[in-house]
Length: 120
Image 1: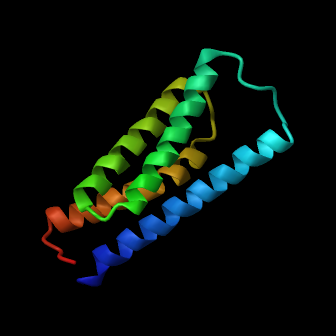
Image 2 (image 1 turned 90 degrees about the vertical axis):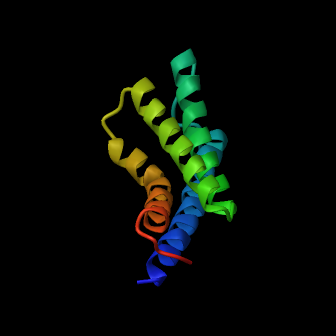
Image 3 (image 1 turned 180 degrees about the vertical axis):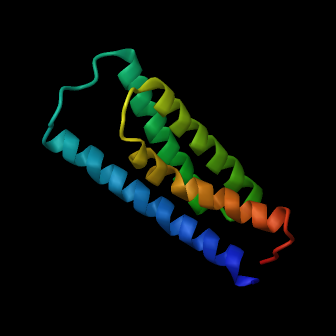
């Protein structure tokens, strides 16, 4: 069972980078070929900022090698996604759950290491 935290951490890192790549592709395609009007209300701009910050903090968590920083960045990322859900009325919560999954994996990895004594 020593391999479990290692596996969870690497799945979280790869998933965070995949989420960032897909989010970047989504933003680039929306800039190149807009499908909707640009944000014109401060709530829309704030929601876009929180979504972007959430993805950015996940990438930073994936790129750090210190477990306490990973969990801190992951929790901030989850907070950004929660603020996005609070600001933007939507019925598609599955997308945010998928975007927050790497952060949840970082927290699970930290929990296994800290509370259950799994070592690397």
